[in-house]
Amino acid sequence: MAGLLLVLVPISLYLVFNWVPPIKASNPTEQTAQRIFYYHVASAWNGFFAFFVVFLASIMYLWKKERKWENIAVASAEVGTLFMTIVLITGPIWAKPTWGIWWTWDARLTSSLVLWLIYVAYLFLRRYLPDGTRRANLSAVVGIIGFVDVPLVWYSIRWWETQHPSAVLAGGKKGSLAPEMLFTLLFCVGVFTILYFLLMQRRIEIAKLEDSINKQYKEWETLS
Image 1 (tube, rainbow, N blue to C red):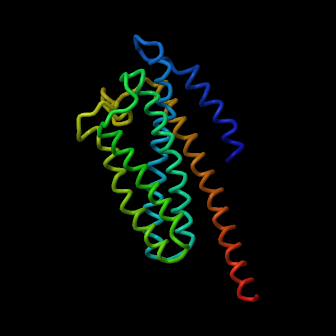
Image 2: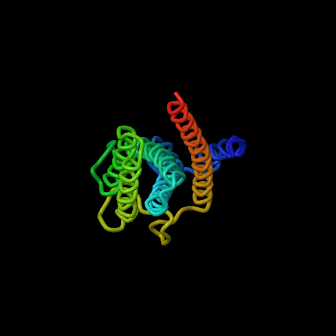
Image 3: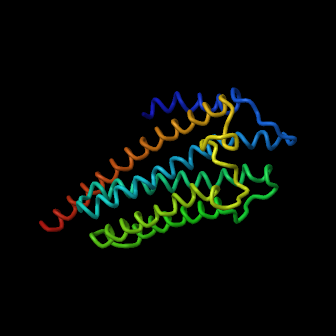
């Protein structure tokens, strides 16, 4: 997958910065900043998907009590937090030339920040509680409850008045895109999804190595 990304990432850069037509805007800076949109949305989509995986893996852990489900949940939480961090960084960069401000306590922005904070708290919980059943159970519960905010983020622009642009994939005139823009967006979402699975694969491999080392260390302690 790493080799595939080496090909796809440059293609996505070409599509975003050369192929796709600029939006109609009086401010050239706004035209340039809007190109962040493709990576902003791709990051958001993969952040939501990552937290959905946390949700499912946490349920499976509480049901099966198998370490592999805990490792999957933790790995996806880490990768999802990374993607949501990108969302919270690229959003203000895009907002400044468009809205004239870096941040506003808009429903979409606020719920996205809350989502990020929930999973940062999840990672802090894992970091500061000792390894064991209690930590695994508590983090699984947080992973399940935290996912409740994902639908709130998704539907926030439908339920409340918001400065945030309408959902571009919702259909209808308000959420429609030019064919070139839609293709580029879907391409970037695909590239970031491949990146998600690559990072997940690497993180789970690391978790397995950590478990193996901890097991050998405990065996060594028993023998000594």
